[in-house]
Amino acid sequence: MENLKIVSKERTERLAWLARIELTEREKEEFSMQLSRVLESASALEKLDLAALEPTFHAFEETESLRDDAEKASMKSEDALANAKKTKDGFFVAPRIV
Image (cartoon, rainbow, N blue to C red; front, side, top):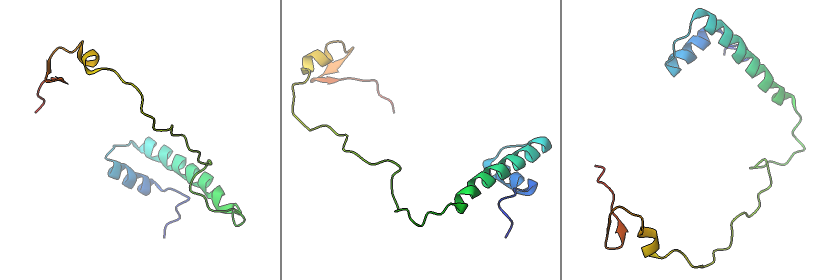
C-alpha cells in the first residue's frame, strides 16, 4: 500500500480527475506538498495516548436548550392576510409554480 503521508503527483492528479478540475503542473506539485503537510499534521493525532479517555459523541456537554411548549396568543388570520395581494377562503394565493 502506498504511503499516504506523502501525496504523490499521481495521487493528486487522480484526486483532481475525481473532482473534475484541471490543474497545471505547478498546481499539482504545490497541492501534493500541501496535502502531504495536512496528512503529517493529522498523523500527530495518532501519537496521542487516548487510552485513559472515555469515548464521547459530542465535543461539548449537551444541555436542554428547548423552551417549554406553552400555548399563547397569536396573530389573527385577518391581520396576517391584511397586506396580501390576493387571498381566497382565508388563505394566501400565490402564483402557480409548475
